[in-house]
Amino acid sequence: MANRTVKDAHTIKGTNPQYLIEKIIRSRIYDCKYWKEECFALSAELLVDKAMELRYVAGVYAGNIKPSPFLCLTLKMLQIQPEKDIIIEFIKNEDFKYVRALGAFYLRLTGTALDCYKYLEPLLNDYRGIRMQRRDGKFELSHMDELIDSLLRDERVCDVIMPRIQKRHILEEMNELDPRVSVLEDDLEDAESSSEEEEGEAPPEPVKPQENRDSNREHRKRRDRVDRRDRDGSRERKRRRSRSRSRERRPRHRSRDRDRENSRRDARDRSRDRHRRDHRERNGGGSGGRGGNKDEMSVDETNKLRASLGLAPLK
Image 1 (spheres, rainbow, N blue to C red):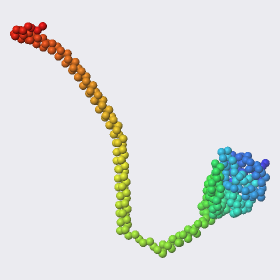
Image 2 (cartoon, rainbow, N blue to C red):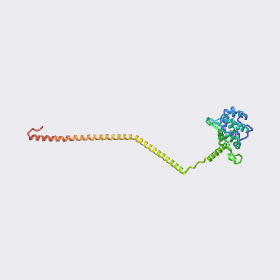
Image 3 (cartoon, one colour):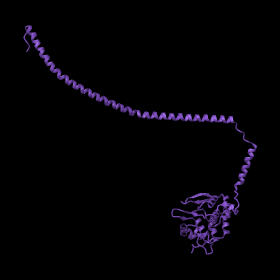
């Protein structure tokens, strides 16, 4: 019984007013503690006191979709459907900005396109700051005019899908709505008039073509100098890099060449020793044979010489 719409309520957009909020969010609101304790048996008069206690604007937050008090009071207003005069008083209230935000949000859900543009557009001049709660539960600073602009333009505000309304230019073409006059137009006109007066008092001197050419030449020369300096700097950096790399590589090449030279020298020494050894062995064997023959011949000759001299032969 506590969650039903009042019997004498009018349908909005062809359906039950509470159905303007999605079912999953609606069921979360019915189960939350704030709805059961603070929104039970609320009337239009008591709703004003609860609206004055609001401290931020939000939809649902946290991972388990917790509804905010702002959204709970919006559903309660859809349930009891207060009179239009009460909603307009909510919007015109300048002392409590969250009461104004609640009335604007409810009017955007239930009002016609003409009512939305008529009562919400003047709130674009309200630049007071308001607290907005994000989906992760953290707060951020926003402003009343930003909230009203999102109500008129965005499809989803505070996790609630906004009903479609006609575009403003269509209503203007049908002569149902006057063209909107911005508050900033007077300031823009004053700025334009002051700029025109300044131009009329002191017109700028035309720049001579010769001065233009000279300035262009100077600019080109400076640019060429900068480009040349950059190129020289890049070349110098490349040279330094190549020198450092060559220095790093030189010890490696030197060590490799030294190892190769040592191995070649060892191989030559080994081969030289082997040849010497072979040569010695060869020369030692041959000289002994040839020496024996020489010794034998020399003994014979010696005996002949001794016999000629009358000496005894050698044994």
